[in-house]
Length: 68
Image 1 (cartoon, helix red, strand yellow):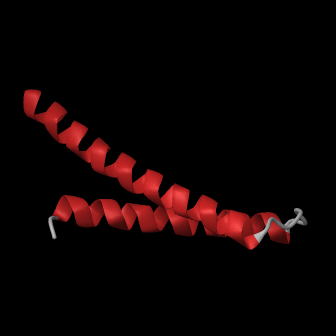
Image 2: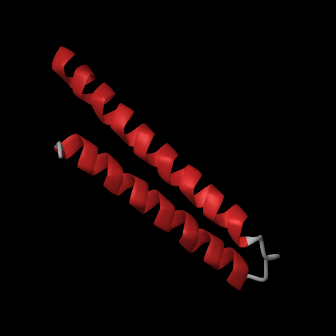
């Protein structure tokens, strides 16, 4: 696996875990519960978004630094 892909996947995992920690903090602060399927769906969306943005962002930065 290429290092850029592995890095992007790990950023996706970090995004999912960060969302779940924030949700848990919301619950501990007395927030209303959200159905589990909704939380899982949002966590998956955050993971996909973080993975895609980190992959595209790394490529953009690499091209930008070559021009300088």
